Amino acid sequence: MKLFITQGSPYARKVRVVLAEKHIECELVTVASLAAPDSPVSEFNPLGKVPTLVLDDGTSYYDSAVIVDYLDNKVPVSRLIPQDNINRASVRRWEALADGVCDATVAVVMEKRRPPEKQDETVIERQLLKITRGLKCLSDDMREGKWAAGDRFTLADIAVGCVLGYIDLRMPEINWREQYPNLAALYEKLMQRPSFRDTAPPAS
Image 1: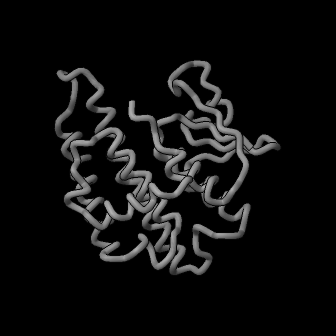
Image 2: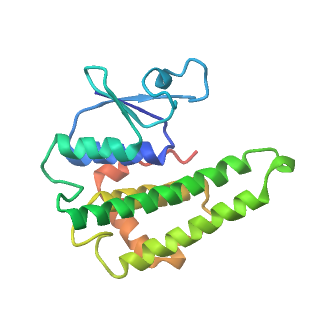
């Protein structure tokens, strides 16, 4: 298997953490620029996005939620996504919310990369509101729990950890640790795991 990634992608990091937690061997292919005409990702993913997983037979899977579901079922031990319907839905809801906050953060980052005179403050404000509401919901739902969804480590924790790490990387001015100490405690605990330490994005 090959996994196409970019170093800073929180979605690719989510898949990499799952690979590490499940002890699945996979070749990582780091792509320098997805916008380059010769980007290898487009050969396997018509959307030209990462992460993209390519199996040995050439089958490709894309969108991080699809990939992690495939990987969790490929090695059906130490499951990260519960099998019973209610708990599975709960974990996937956490993942959807965390990915949504990630989407909003990416949107702000991309808008702020435009020349100042072309930036749309309405777009930025709308996405910032999604981030604010999303983080509050994550914190409120977790309450005083040890883990995000239930009493054990799951994909919910991985998704939350990846979005918090991405916000630290791209928008450190969002002081989420002070506002949400329960999320800060969760992130500190996650960063003690080799899967999170080894996939931390470069500070640059």
